Length: 163
Image (cartoon, rainbow, N blue to C red; front, top):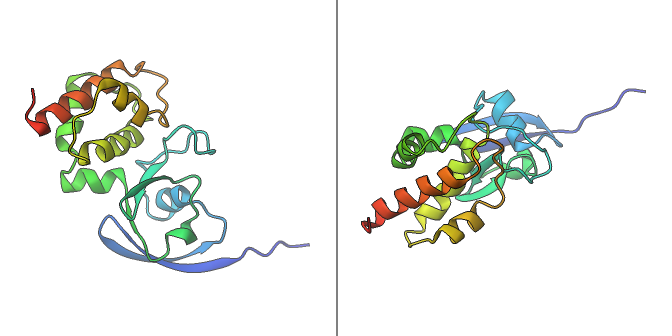
């Protein structure tokens, strides 16, 4: 017996560009981005929404790309790490990540950067504890988080002009 796979046409804006594709109903957004659009910055880690490696923005809010179906993004605006890098939105954060050695293997880095950008875009002071809490849904197996928190704290202080 052959299995019929339900397919849907979706149109969404990815990093400012309108895209229309036909996708399987159960295809995850991160798989769509990686396989259909070759935007490979978002990674598949746990595939349970726990590690944060698949983080993308959907209509301005960070979401787990492994828990969001591509069909759910129909009509939405999606931003990936490639998009926010291209616009320069996180250039200072990326520079500080390098300066503070806040990345090693780089697998978690795109999700960390997008999550940190959400915190920084609030434009408010944040304690180290608040930064850690905000990052609590993103796992890093290499750095121990200290350098990541340093980089985010430094960038936030620079943006706010406090240090």
